[in-house]
Image 1 (cartoon, helix red, strand yellow):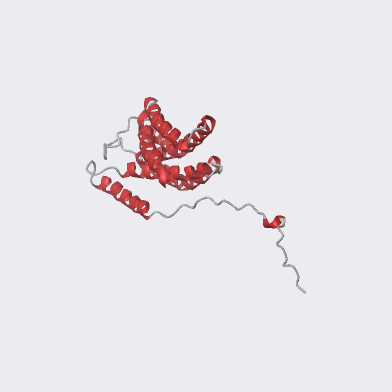
Image 2: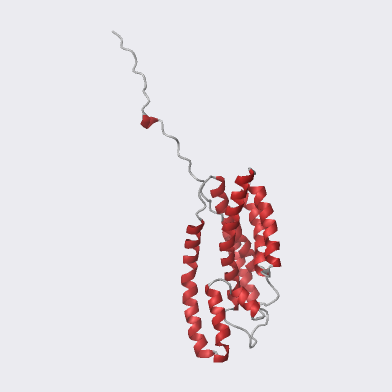
Length: 230
């Protein structure tokens, strides 16, 4: 006597929607090598002043490239950008070392600088803590290339970290606003982003933030154009 072959039954547990995993960021040895070249350029600039430059510029562009690529992957896979969480991670990482350095600076200021300069240096310390020391230095007319002159301050090199901090604040907002604009207009994100990246640096330059405008310009050019392939 033959028995009919059992038929496969489908239970609710068998019909599960496959999980879509976000693409992982792959290791980029070329970018790691470029970071090393950037450090060498910065060191070379300070050893041979005015003969070698460009290290900080490369660092800015590289940071913007990685930042744009990270947020772009989130946008194109439909994930939340998590801008507040990104800010919390980034600035928590920065504020500890900066605070320790500034405390050491304040001790050195009291020990080695005359009281007549304390107000100027305290303004630079606050500016360094809140990532606006580039504007403070511009307001005080500090010449970054003056070398070891009487106006030289230990914090004048903090301008680059301040500009970087401003990019960390502004860049995610630009990307989030661009993503919202693309959704509203029914257009693809990347063409809209290229238009925004081209317009915003000019607006920042006109407002007086020349350093930030230049950084955003380079970041927009490289981040907006190349990050889609990151």
